[in-house]
Length: 254
Ligand code: PGA
Image 1 (tube, protein in one colour):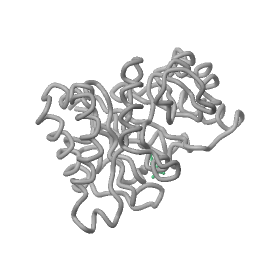
Image 2 (image 1 turned 120 degrees about the horizontal axis):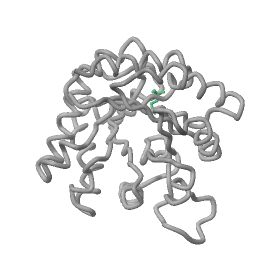
Image 3 (image 1 turned 180 degrees about the vertical axis):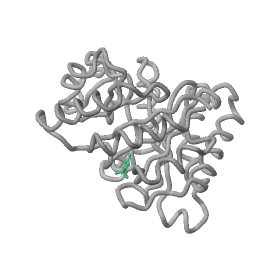
């Protein structure tokens, strides 16, 4: 099994004080983990703080969004190069909270994905279906469409060494995680879809699960063959809970 990847998504939480406390907790608790890669995606203003505290540790950092444009008159936007200035190596793209609240289209998300990749950032593309779509049995169709927009625009090879996070919208922040079997089935579907265009890209791709991962359900998710780790929201705001999740990932490495 490849190394697991666990990504903290702080969303719009934190301040200089609480961040310092939390990041120091991460450093103290996670530095001994050898079989898992850990990343924390912080709000933009705290990238400098993450860089200061995390450089020379085994924890990487990143952002939760980036501009689809490279430079120019785009008020309020943040470019890939700006993230690189602060040592970011990952960026979350197309999170459903953004897609719904800020009307991000699949086309915009695809452009952002290619911006990140072109600048040497590792994009973490979020995909997933609503509860209504799952109950209607069309979840694979929905997820395929989200991925296909990128494949059709840039080719499947763009997925080489990147990350997709399967995040069923009904599981995000609800306490109701997908079961290991539900997630594994979708992860396999995603990998097979990309493999049908580019086998090597599909093999090098990491597919995370996100949506109410906690210390209790992490093991049953991480033992699944196509689940390469997790994107963790709420539980990443506690160093103790985040450590337990990272431990579960570390232990499932074999
Ligand atoms: P959650 O968030 O762990 O709080 O459900 C996951 C996510 O939105 O990435």
